[in-house]
Length: 172
Image (tube, rainbow, N blue to C red; front, side, top):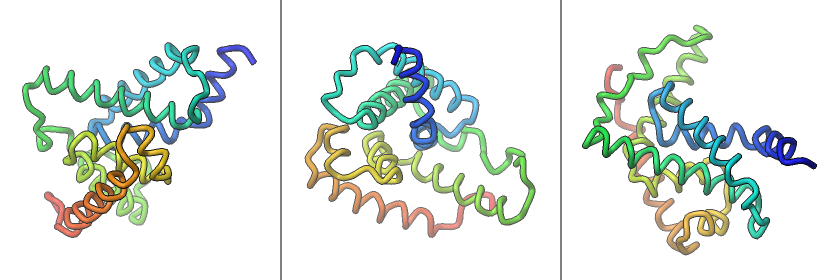
């Protein structure tokens, strides 16, 4: 299989995961699209360097998470601080499907991602991998921390997110 075909297959298989990782790091939809494109470019650039010492999905997560973290660092330098309230309010954006059930679900998902966005970078990476059903071992390999540390941190993150989600979201 040539490089381009391999790349297309990898992206087709992992595009939803990559997008969900972006959602965990970037609230603004246009900015999220930019980060997604940056991840695709980074995968293309480093595809020849993948040596199959880990699963391709592990490598994709590393590229995606590292790209998102790099984006956050550059944004932080550019803005000097991140103000979550200044981000685009996802609730105000028009939905393609105005069905009430879909709208309620979309608001819940948006609220979840806003809560995730308040977490530290490492916690965002952990919860993104958890939401993708990545094993504790693979998560530890991706992030370079121990498996026990992954489990402890995930327990604390889930507890914190549960508390945030039980609070009434602003603007409702």
